Amino acid sequence: MQPEVFIPESLPPPSPGKARYGVIGSPIAHSLSPAMQLAGFQTLGIPAEYLRIEIPADGLARAVPKLLEAGMQGWNCTLPHKNEMFRLVTRRDSSAAEAQSVNTVRVESGQLHGFSTDAAGWEAAIHEAWHVQTTNLRILILGCGGVGQTLARHLTRSGCGSLTLLNRHPQRAKELALELQPIAAGRFPIRAIPWKPTRLAPALAETDLLVNATSLGLHEGDAWPLPPDFLQPPLRVYDTIYRKNLTPWIRAARQRGCPAEDGLGMLLHQGLLSLEIWTGKKAPRAEMEQALGQAAERKN
Ligand SMILES: NC(=O)c1ccc[n+]([C@@H]2O[C@H](COP(=O)([O-])OP(=O)(O)OC[C@H]3O[C@@H](n4cnc5c(N)ncnc54)[C@H](OP(=O)(O)O)[C@@H]3O)[C@@H](O)[C@H]2O)c1
Image (tube, rainbow, N blue to C red; front, top):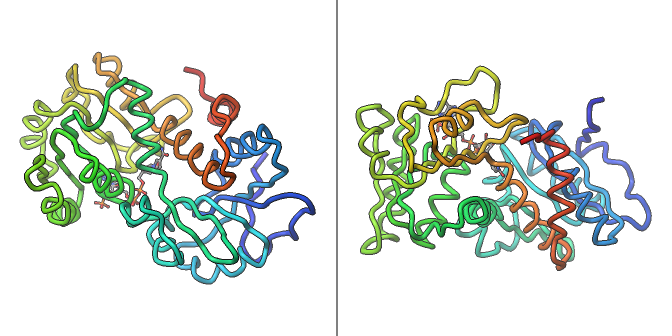
């Protein structure tokens, strides 16, 4: 059965006695957040609904007043709206200011307060998977779109061993490196390199953690971010993408002996932080993780 998807113009009236939250994006039908967040609200004993709301790329500014009229008290924000949401909020938490992006909105007296839980969620997932601190790692990020930029900005402030940036369209990686180099100056090196095998292979030899922040792997038949031959232990591999049976690329990395994780842990941790922002209560991790695992049909 297809999950129910709403549009801002046709949100039903709020259910009496229930808080109203949701996730906005496009496409949104397959978001796993409703299962995870509803489990969280339920375990905390907070009557709430959490709706999937489809908003086209150019429709966010028009949609926000409708979300408020419909009684939304907060929402998660995913592709393609995180940057535009950053521009639209009235207050920005330091996490949003750092990321220049918003993935969590809390409505306060009709005003929008924006947060970004992506980088903290990613960091928690890395720490949980491998018991390592990102501050000690030489990190290479493939992909300087929204999520790659958020992680790079966070790492620049929190620190890491070194940061190497690559993007299919190289100008994006170059511009990000130019933005971040002055902030990291004297602490650790940041560089952008072209996405070419001859440059990647030596860069990987000096990398502890490789992050796929491209959208490659989201769909069956996608090209791999880079050939699995390039993956040699002890390189750790983190894919921000999550899929039912992991991405083929992550499975190949594991077969080659590289510790490798996909983005389900990041999704869990960013979601725990969102629920805490909305409720002010500790998120019930076990119940939310179980609901997320079920929604993702995760078997491993
Ligand atoms: N696990 C989580 O909680 C979580 C949270 C957020 C996002 N994500 C995942 O992160 C992925 C990226 O999200 P985003 O918000 O950063 O998206 P985005 O802003 O649209 O950026 C997409 C990135 O993928 C690159 N790309 C797309 N097609 C490519 C191709 N054929 N070859 C090489 N690079 C390609 C783009 O490069 P160009 O700049 O050259 O186009 C860009 O760097 C999403 O697919 C999402 O699943 C996961």
